[in-house]
Amino acid sequence: MNDVNIVDNNDIAPDTELPLGQLLTNAQQWVHLSLQHLMAKRGHGSLTPAHLTFLSNLDCGVTHASEVARRTGVSRQAVYRMTNELKALDVLALEDDPDRKNQKVIRMTPHGISVIGDARQCLQEVEEELESRLGKTDFDQLLAILRKEWDAPLNEG
Image (cartoon, rainbow, N blue to C red; front, side, top):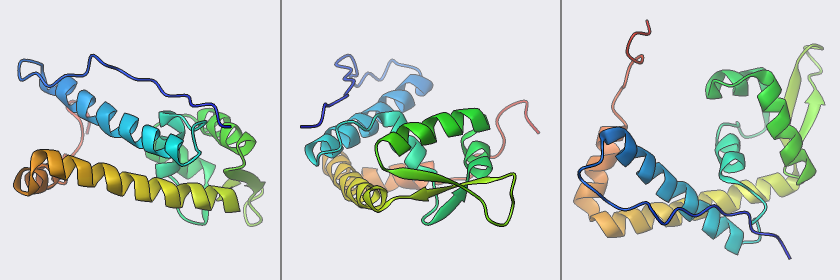
């Protein structure tokens, strides 16, 4: 039986008085916790929200560790640490790049490919539930707003 490693935050409540940043964080936590609960029901209870976020930054097939570090804004050491955690769960493999000897590539294992398939199905369930709660018009409007180009953060660039 898989141990479920789920962090729940019962203090997440809709409150129009909260600042925008907290509202966005609460929404993100709802998505992550919902995804984690659904993944646990499918036998992936050992995956943390950090694991699921990391996996969402990988390409199908092969991804260079340096590319994951760039995408996520973390050090290569952090990428290797997370990759090693997911290696221990038989989700990822870390190999030398045959073309660039100083590079490592991250590959999905067969089990990892199955995990990603389950995660995609669970994320679809989360989005369907959110659309049901918000209504189609508000859900579509939310997506349209979040898909807008945000440009560089303040004081950068």
